[in-house]
Length: 238
Image 1 (cartoon, helix red, strand yellow):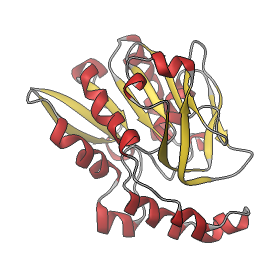
Image 2 (image 1 turned 30 degrees about the horizontal axis):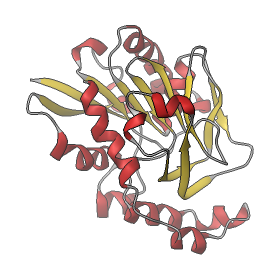
Image 3 (image 1 turned 135 degrees about the vertical axis):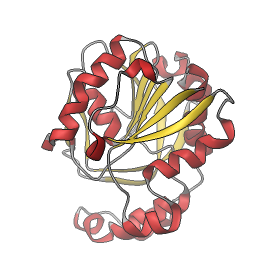
Image 4 (image 1 turned 120 degrees about the horizontal axis):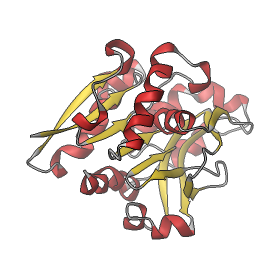
């Protein structure tokens, strides 16, 4: 039995945890039915447990979102960077989400910081680049699809030798590939419409402050089966 490890980098809002589960549980909910018999799921909380054992001891790695900010360089987060570089060097399959996306880009030589246009929240359209349409993982998705998003920071400068696989009107770096089996996404493939709704409810004041209409964002929430499918498609590479 080999293990796909979910690196936990933060907690969802308490009301989300109570009703739907924490970030890692949202991943597990999407993955359980598609998990190969020979692969188990494990969770590693990097904030409490430190750096995991050698990346090659895992069949694959996923990194969750967080309410922390990569640019704040918290010690537990910085300690993960050399481990992520080692995982990339050893071609361990990886998929980072939101904070995980920004942390991977930062670890590999890019810059993650606050987006000058502010927060992006809600169900937004994401479009594949030409490279995305030809990518072994992202070519399994439609050329454009809705995805759930909630982030204030973004990958502002790409690492060397990184391929942009998807973008939208807010963020030029919605999905990236760093190596043969190493990807990251700014959007949340693990979110359900109910979780997205809860996030916008929590962020209403902040969204109004930047000129957004939270009620319109809630009304625009849709199902994101294509985006969610990314997690299950990733299992083919472990």
